[in-house]
Image 1: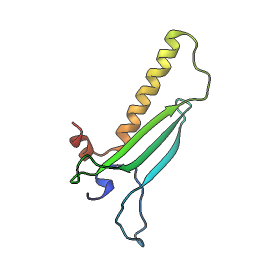
Image 2 (image 1 turned 45 degrees about the vertical axis):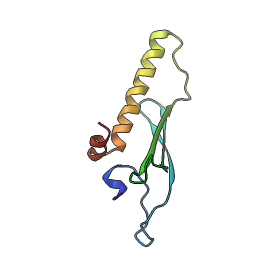
Image 3 (image 1 turned 30 degrees about the horizontal axis):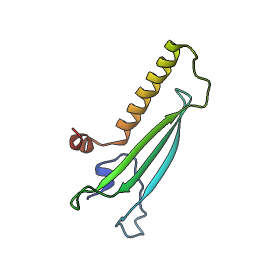
Image 4 (image 1 turned 120 degrees about the vertical axis):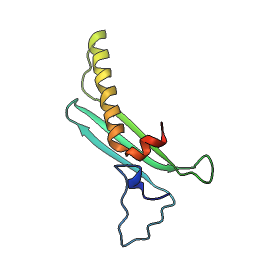
Length: 104
């Protein structure tokens, strides 16, 4: 598989004092997004691959707000678009160029 850092910019780092083999992991980070007053929840896990020669990693990003959202249609769609853009930026910030090449 190589190093996770070749594919992901955010990943669990195992102490060099421990064996480096990894048979599974689940990681959750909650990262406040101050510019939109939202919370980004990043979930990452090793999942069963479609075939034995592959390694599959789940990268799930959830962005939510607990503040009041606009009640009018234009304001609501504007807020949703800002959150969509923020989620896309977060995804791009999590992956490397090598990963981008794999998912094209």
